[in-house]
Every structure is written in C-alpha cells, then in structure tokens.
Length: 198
Image 1 (tube, rainbow, N blue to C red):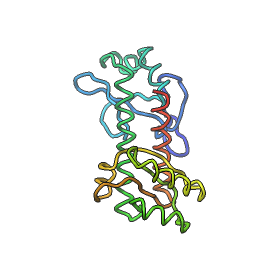
Image 2: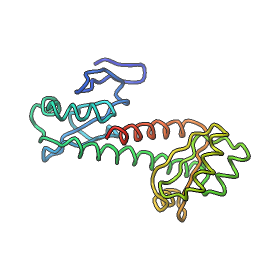
Image 3: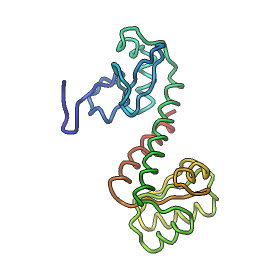
Image 4: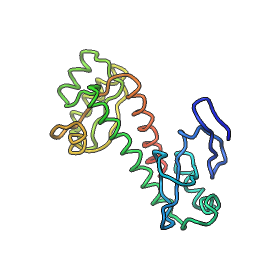
C-alpha cells in the first residue's frame, strides 16, 4: 500500500489520481446494497474513493466505477443523491468543528460582539454569517472583515447556529486563528466547491 507523508494513498475511481486518503471521499456499501458516503472514514467494510468534487462523483456513477470497485455488490446509485449526502456530510463536519470551538472558547458570537472584535483588531481567522442574516449587518461585517483581512463566509441559519453555540438565535460567529479555524476553512472550501459544481 502506497503511503504519503500524512497517511496512505488512495486512488479516485473516476480520475485515477492518487491522493492522501484524507483528501478523498470514501464510499461504502450498506447491508442492503445501497452506496453510502462515509465522509468521516469510519464505517466498516471495503471502501471506494473519489475526489471531493461533483465532476469525479458524476463520472464514477456514469461509468459504473462503484459497481466495479465493489464487484457488483452495490446497487446503481444516482449522482444527485450522493452529492446531497456529501454536501450534508461536509456541512455536518463544519457544525461539529464549530461546536468544538464553542467548547474550547475559540468563538465569539453575535453581531455586536463580532463587529466590536473586528473593530478592535481581534485575532479572528474566520467570520461565518448565516444565510438569513440581515443584509445591512452582513454588509457591515463583510466590510470590517475585509479591512482586517479576515475571511468571511455564509452558511447555516440563525436557529441552527444558535443551537450549535448553546445560545438563542445567532446570525454570526467569529473563530479565533489557529488549527481549528484552518480545519473549518478546508471544509468550507469543499462545501462551496460542491455547491458551485452541483
């Protein structure tokens, strides 16, 4: 088995490119023969891999690469259904990482607190706004974040963000610089790429 510095290499069943396993999406077959996304690489059984993009996933489905990889033991799948599973898995990973940030006190939430932090030059690595944030507040936060060279993104809704943070509704959260924010940014990049390509 080939290994990279950061773990074993796997091959995308669509483009045939070798990449570190943690950069690829793993798929497994459920007992009923249904193909499932195993984004966290934790489900038992033989796995097949694609790049984390819609083009490779669609190619794998169209060319029956999953059936070949699993030697015919999986049912035919629709690319759109698998893409929806994948987007949900990436979003859930972001939710989990934000929850970790709350537990480790690496997040600041609420528009007033985030705006104040940005104005005072707080060490933020990311500002995440919800899809249903007020346009006026979003514009103010984006302007301040750009001025401080802090990346800003839009995802989730106020209710869900509030639940993640153990608060009432929240429309914005800022995450401190460090390894956690780097992990969140990787997942946000993957999510945006999937949504853009889908």
